[in-house]
Image (tube, rainbow, N blue to C red; front, side, top):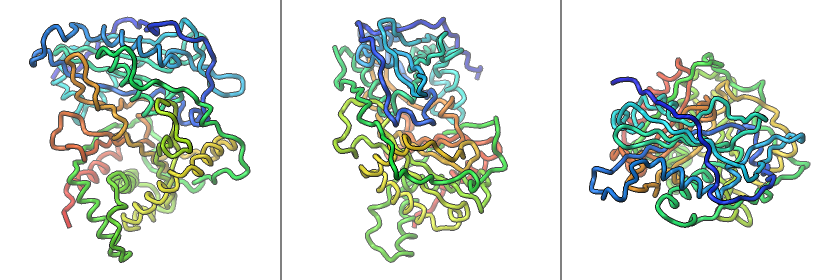
Length: 463
């Protein structure tokens, strides 16, 4: 197969369809988490159904025109995404909005059919995704201010296309991005306004100085290290774990736990996410050859929207995530029964879902700077779950069917510390609803061992 060649046109700028307010908008304490200050890249993959029983008058010959129009309409409601992120003298970011706001938009064309790329659902398609992601030579304008949002739409010979979205994590989390994309699709289908109106209200998640900040979960001196890190050579892969493999893993863990604790009611505590996270945490530590006397930390991003009192309003699209951390020595992670690792994960999630923990987490961010820095050495492992964000649900328009949604391994999603659980694409019927795609980035030398661990999971015997 010939290599993918993407031909890009000059950048154009999409303005909100109507006049928007001029203002300077403050961000929340959670928006100011240091690890969120970067662009995140998501690829939406659309198959054209123009030859499959859709009347020709339902199909715009150039879907890019539809996307531009509906994006412009959506920006009227989500006008802060067309503004500029500006760092002020107090070190805080704010969003500057005025009547000239706009979003950079790149139109591109590819030299092949999407089917030849398996709709980016193949083993090697993480690198392909980089070419379809939104990137500008510089993410800043002349004054050094950042664009919160950018789009790149790439047309393929088959009539299908990809939408590459680059969005600053400072302005919204995954739930917020999904909400914004659904608004665009609703408008592309002919609605006059989004069904869910966006809510800014970042003051709801502002912290204050506390005399009792949460203790640091780990320190630099005790952090485990890998002989493969640091490195500038990372490889990115997607591993498909079918629902049956997860079921067998859970049943084995349930048996293991009940044998150790003589408890008969533990089935309900084992979720797919907790079981798979424990397995992958251990597998990754093995692949990186972390030293056994060092410590490793699992960080789980926990959604806070429904656990505040009162809950955040529908339509809130800012960051509403806190960390639930589990710290073990590598020796403990390797030698404890895996069911005990799941138990640790279950316990910290239960704590993290409480209003007090969320409030304490926000206040801790205000009170003290993070006093450890273990990112990039392998000791820190952050897992985020995209399965219920809705990136693949109800996103078809104009005879174009959304087949796949995936992170592109750029910036945040190319980090060795991050793992993403995502739902199966619509191409793989064997995965069904309970399957999970696991996106990871690892040093080249560590990936074969991790791949071996994932293959072992698929071969796990029933008990």
